[in-house]
Image (tube, rainbow, N blue to C red; front, side, top):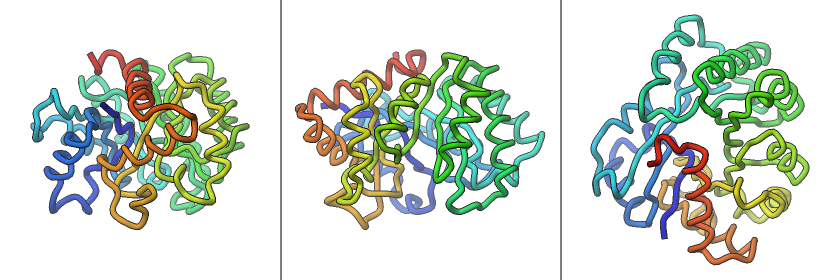
Length: 268
């Protein structure tokens, strides 16, 4: 069995003491590919995923490949300026960088003013269009503005991307798939009260499903409350496979193939 963790924050300080062991456990669990994103520390952290992807880790690249995404999280939109966007454009040709993200809107915490979030979201979609890279979306309590901006700046490109840590219901799932997105489900889908998320997973076409951890956050049941890590992707995949009436092996193979289809150049 092989799995892909399509979204993790391995640069997070929670991994400073044992990052190599965490990656080793991922490889041992069958997680062969990790997509590393920065932990949301602002524009100076744009290169966080690249630094991880460029290192040699236990097991070698045939056992655990790390890819990277570059983007400014909506929490940090207030810190972005023209220099941020120039640096992003410079980083996107890196061979390990497969996407722009995570980008989007977060109206739950409002760590950045909403107008700045919308400006940063639109700017990064423009950069991604120019680079012909998919995008990775973070949206929380901001569906209507997310849809509006995607319709205006992205849906027509055909480049698609990932709805990270999908938290909507079946209606949102169908709309996202209609825009060309893959939906990545994380530990939330295993939580007792996440019925609408499970409904969304059931209506998502198999070719658009992905697994993620969002490590170190949102560990799945039965590990909820612990620091999440990529090896725990197996538990989320197990729950989703049961939900959809599939074997874990078949489900893992399908979601891994979906990731390779979205990022073919980096997954040869």
